View (cartoon, rainbow, N blue to C red):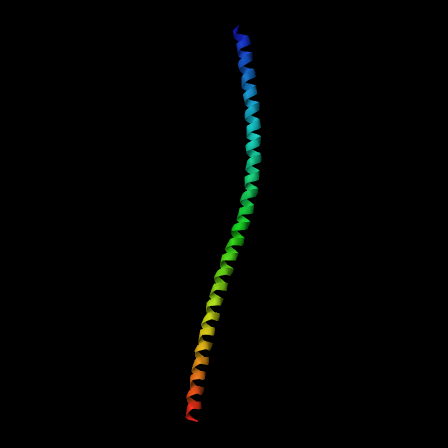
Amino acid sequence: MDNEKFQELVLKHLEDNAKRLEGISEKLVEHGRRFDGYDERFDGYDKRFDNLETLGKQHHDELEKVASQVEKLIRNEDEITDFLLKRRRRI
């Protein structure tokens, strides 16, 4: 095989490799776009979860306040009941 033919084969091989690499590069760009879309969706989910976490904490705090108020009402009711029972015994 002469030098000229060898150079042609090498060039053809390099061109084929360049085409394959170009195809791979295009696929990587396409995958990159898809992953960007996934990132945007996950960012949206993160924001929603942050909002849910905040709302959950607020709900928990409100429930604790309500529970405290209920405990106070029960104590007050018990005190009133005790007072009325003592008063009734006196009568």
